[in-house]
Length: 175
Image 1 (cartoon, rainbow, N blue to C red):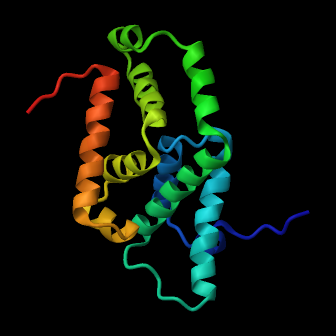
Image 2 (cartoon, rainbow, N blue to C red):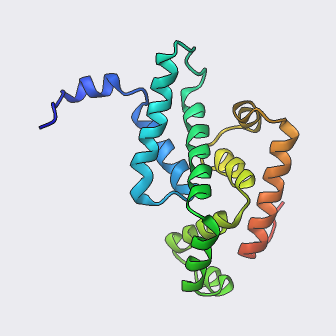
Image 3 (cartoon, rainbow, N blue to C red):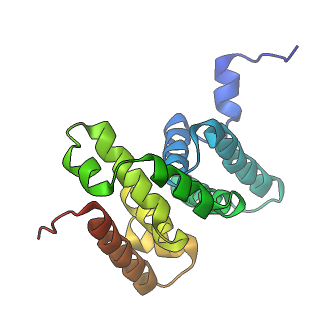
């Protein structure tokens, strides 16, 4: 039987706050990780933070941003190991054509599903920066710093991802 600690002791030992844990789960889900694997992904983020502490490394300046980037990287890894293309083809075969799905999408759940499916077909690098920018709410400079890539690369990936999303979802661009 596992030893149960009081809630306060558990919360004090958790390297992530509740809000950070929710953010990690959201990034993982938006990155295409199935609901059943979200808790495992969250544990991986916690483990990496604890390993960092155990090695005596400085804690990240922004733990929330760091955790979101790690979660995003885990989502990319998950796709690579699960033969992403096969899964996408199977899912798309079961769905209506995208045009009818978006046109009939009057409730937010259906729209969210259409966006999630479109995120699945984005190249890994584009999906990663898009999720970090719009779902993890990191700034472009934060993304560049956390991924250790040039600012211009982040901007070009965001632009290309947004363009592809608009095309796939048949969304009119508004300025």
